[in-house]
Length: 303
Image 1 (cartoon, rainbow, N blue to C red):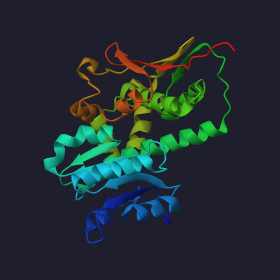
Image 2: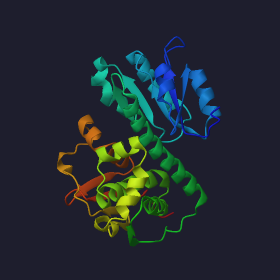
Image 3: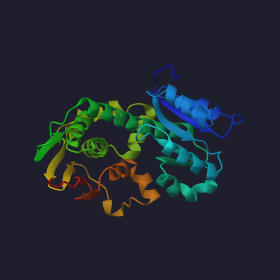
Image 4: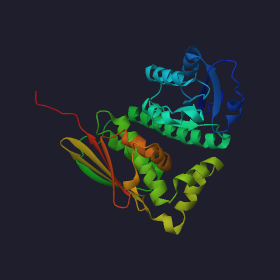
């Protein structure tokens, strides 16, 4: 059992003879790392650490067919929704990255990993999963107060406000969790990248040095950022819900973005891909600073 209460990353090794020194060194103040071999040991560790489990890491030394077998096991297991799954590959296996992502991996890593770089990737993923877990708990506590709202326009200046708004708006859906996750991602992106001009690369550096929150607070106090906000417009239509998120940033070249290409996914991060998986349609417009997300409503018929 994880006695520290810190987020736990479980690394799965092919067998007990494999050197686990890399994973021992990977642990840091932000998360603990435990190693297991075999499905039974994984299930036991998952059961014992249900409250702190935050990511799985599949070792590169597994044969490729075993990596896909493990992806099937993860799909069949009672793992938390949106749990990050990292799969490490040998350089010779690079051509299977898309297949692994389609099989359920959230991140696919190539070759020998730098400890600090991997810590950053894990920290970002763990933060995202923590937000998902918090959203789920919040949804379970709330009762819908927005079911009859037809439209609304909201201003958001902080990430916390964004998560709270996404939670509230998601309750217009029969299945609110995916919408809460996707809408939170879009709003938080608008706050960080649009309002505060924090690029994806800079965010990684700030997380690596442990000063992301400090930098967010610093920028919010600067005159050039202090008055900025994200606008979220909500519209209920007979067959769908429409969410439009607008930020004041410079945007990005969304015409060059392709959700089905690995390179663009790496360039823009996993957030956009996550949002696309939560809605029927996600469309960027303007200079890339306006995004419209559509969630279809279930068909209803008169009795």
